Image 1 (cartoon, rainbow over the protein chains, first blue to last red):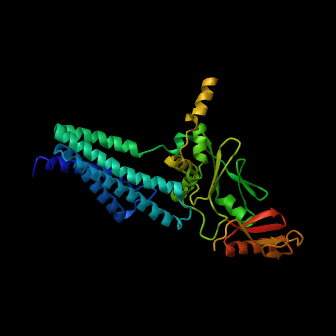
Image 2 (cartoon, rainbow over the protein chains, first blue to last red):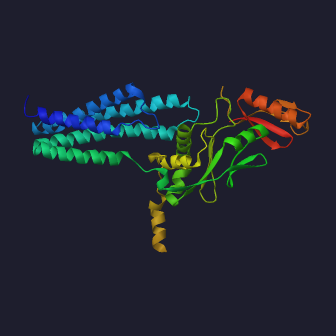
Length: 298
Length: 61
């Protein structure tokens, strides 16, 4: 035991707890079960340890020791690769795939969370060494709250209005409201689709949302999440029974056509509203210089 | 080999509607056409699209 042992242990504990707070298994069912969790908790432990020993290293004037953080960075980039590869491999066996944009979002989140762990462990140890354990406890609490805030992004209901519309056929064309979805030839399939299908129209609240929901990855994420939560009426070898989203080119609305096992309009709207807005799909055309200038002119 | 956006077969009641390309199945009536298209759809893992009342194409997407 020396003067750094307790602060380091405290920092490691704070980091690991922060990782546990961020690790929750929800409807996305990822990470699943014990093994996936063990992997992420172990990596979180390593991250916490790295964060916790930064302050003692600086105090001992071992400035070069900080370079080990670069190793940590490449290590956690590897985590992102691992997540991406696993999920991409598995995606081929999903009835409604997640899509690459969603997978990339999950992978980035895993990498980012490890950095948050490093940061909260670093803060906790530094404050402990600089002041005392009570200040360290206070700063840990603040960092838990910050971590909670940072890990939750926007959901779709913040940027769009969702409306239920029954799908219908005009000839062989399947429509949700006036948005063309696809051409279904067989009368038998048409009957199934009218019986099991549900339609929703998603109207963007502003110009940014319009571009964001147009993103194909964002649309696939909506389909995947709805299919996971409500079940999906399809099997391999029935390509006609595929949930689809198409866009109304006139005004940027999108028509969502899904085939849930559980036909519950209220729940479906809730689930679509809770789909995360994928970071990689967010676009901000309203922030571009050209658009800002135009507003000034008016 | 992976096919994408390919017409795998055409099912029609009117022989003059289609020529060449994919296999063409000629049927006598609508029921026969529906049944044949449903079978082909299942076997070929494609979707039956109706181009008109007397012409279906089975497309791999």
